[in-house]
Each structure stands twice: as C-alpha cells, then as structure tokens.
Length: 125
Image 1 (cartoon, rainbow, N blue to C red):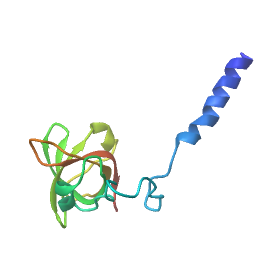
Image 2: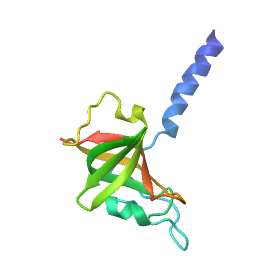
Image 3: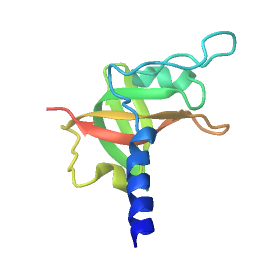
Image 4: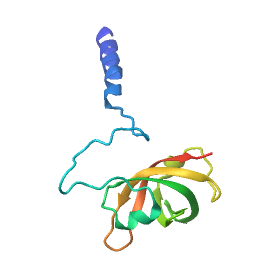
C-alpha cells in the first residue's frame, strides 16, 4: 500500500512538468532560420497561403455548419472552413452572433482549400 501511495504521489507531481502556457504572452520558441515555419495565422484570409501545421488564432464568428464537424468561420478579412470536434464546444452554445476566438493549426489539402483544425474555442464577451 505504501509503495502504491508513493507511486501515485510521484505521478501527480510529475504531471505539471508536461504543462505549458500557450496564451497571448507565451514564449514563441522554436527554430528560427532557413526553412523555418512562418509565425501564426491571425486572419481567415491568411489560411489559404499558410504552411501545414502553422499555428492559428482567429477571432470572428462561426456563421454556418457545413457538414459533420466542418463550419464556416468569418472575420473582417474573409471566410475559412474550421474543423471543430464536438468536444471542443463543451457546454457552450455558439450562434452566428457569438464572437469567438479559435486556437488551432492550419491543415493543407491537395484537393481542397486549407482549413483550420481547432483545438480549443473561447467565447469573447
């Protein structure tokens, strides 16, 4: 029993080591130099020309559900398709009038335009 308690305690203490802040003032570490991925995408219009896996933080409105987990997003620069898993919405209700901030990565495709795979969503009040 004592060994089990010690194991559980060491696992609980190790978990915070894997956590990291990824908000607005987070460090933007990583490789800088030839071939480096450009900075994050902040407007819908930038998604079309962004590289695969480029970080994206967009603010605007989800205006329509297209099919399955694909939604049309619009900001002042234009429109882009978002891929949002149902669990990302959580218990939040989002309408076309709700202003949101979505965080994710650009997904590039051979046969269709780039979209954004959304990791989390915030409602902006």
